[in-house]
Length: 270
Image (cartoon, rainbow, N blue to C red):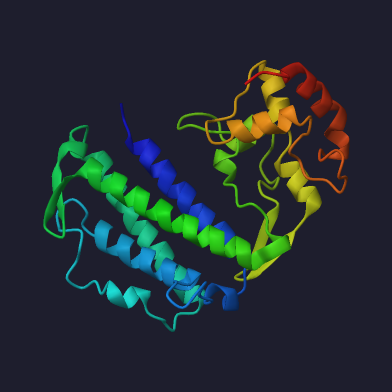
């Protein structure tokens, strides 16, 4: 079984969650600490960037903790503005992409190769799994803080590629939702750092058709493990998870009849 596509997908998912979450807050909130001993979003991103740069520079051939890294400094206040911070962030992810490509090129035995981190021997697979867990841990912190700062304006940063539980090799979210190129895949449109514009019509298009409709079309629920509980809950509540101004039916007006039919068809399924 080739685990590399799954590992790559998880990295991409967490990276996208961070970027979508931070796009919803301003620069002041990025630097705000939750408490005296807590780390701001800006500091956490700075730390993640430093970690990824160190771990994935010459990933297969050198120790993952580079001599030039200054880990403690990553948790100190810095002078980088948003643009500079994310320029370094994108550079770090390019190193990750390069390293994963090198693992792929090394062939099926690459995961069993031994590398070191702080002189501790680890297989390539163990090192990657540890790194994914580390990224996921800090992604959760960033999303939680961003949500608190955004307040009522918060838009859930669901990665469109994972919205329907997509697995490697499956059609992307556009194809599964019947969307064409050029149609938006997110209700959050980022125009510049710190600025956002939320369009209800764009949200409706991006979530069309909803999970229940897709499941009804295929006569079975196609939600992945992450989304299935939400889909099941929505169906039990006889509600489509599409947003709307209506508090009684959260489906888009043009889809309510379809959603109602789909919900009836799928009652008790999953």
